[in-house]
Length: 279
Image 1 (tube, helix red, strand yellow):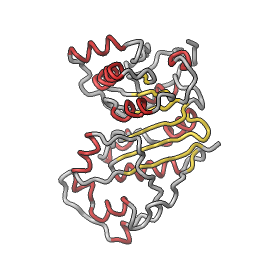
Image 2 (image 1 turned 90 degrees about the vertical axis):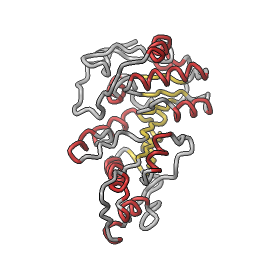
Image 3 (image 1 turned 135 degrees about the vertical axis):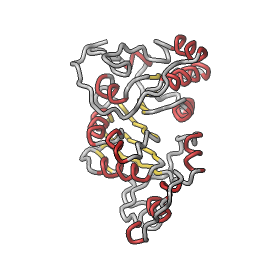
Image 4 (image 1 turned 30 degrees about the vertical axis):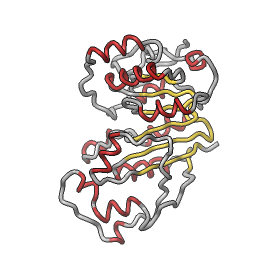
């Protein structure tokens, strides 16, 4: 372990801690995995922060040198566990701020014998600022982050210009940033924020534009409002038309979770984005 200079916390947080109490089975899983599948990281002022000066030797942690894929908001780990099983020569780091989800994922990793996955129950920004060396991440996954769809809460969204700067710092040159959301205005925000960064480029620029765009379809039917049971106010085609596009094909390794199925049943569209770190 080596020391790093203390970092300042950023506010507002992109998450709110819901019930963090572990039921007995999850507590047992937590205790068994701590220091092994579950990273034992001393925290600072908050239990999701990293203590000043603490760092991780990732080569020693995994016992090898291999590409590292980081997923933010792994939940119970359907996507990352499946990917780790299919790619044993790649290392994976799951960042999940909710203790029950982290405990469930750690238990799954142990049960399935996935030696190439670690879980960090920490704020993703803290991990990026304190634990991930520059250029150390081959791929960064941000699938279905909290949409904070109320206007007054949008400042809490994870994907902001400052976060894009952090992503550019930790993703290796030519590395990949994959994102997905089921909320159209968050998809637009992601596209605008990352598109404005000089560190990334979109290999699917112009794809699914115009009437083929899922954004056009959402606007024509006001599908997001309808999914919440609100009165729909569709836009006429000229206003609804998304001539920019840039939406990526669905990432094959992204497992269709119960969360995504629920969004689809509610009538929302899924937006995938894929950016490459410029050399």
